Image 1 (cartoon, rainbow, N blue to C red):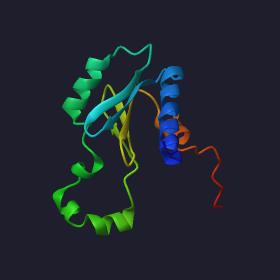
Image 2 (cartoon, rainbow, N blue to C red):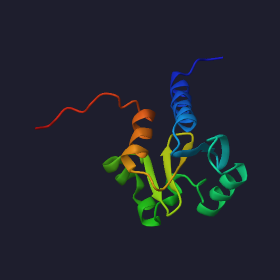
Image 3 (cartoon, rainbow, N blue to C red):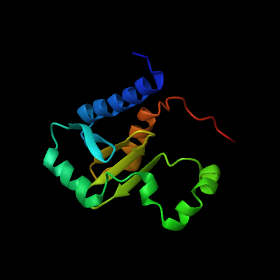
Image 4 (cartoon, rainbow, N blue to C red):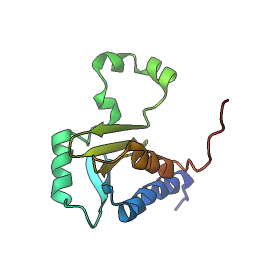
Length: 143
């Protein structure tokens, strides 16, 4: 069996978010979607949700769709041109009255984090993304 450091890195990133679900009261659950199927999921102990709730969200909100299928058709026709200009979509936040959803796009899966909606973005999404992407270093001031 070959060792794949890239796969280990992605697994480590997912484990980091799994840990955040266990320690942050504002994060309700995390799960991944691979090939349109829900894979590993973790629900916070204090969340009033279960696996059926998550599966119904996936169905209702079509969370199992990849970033490519969410693009308008005109965009797909010029996808290569745009991909060279913008690069790959990395993440997106969807905000509802009762729930905030963070979708992180990887090559082989989409990681979805369910977050309480009444929280400040910098206390949830920023922390999750910083933790996920190891953005521990402080950006240098440009001034």
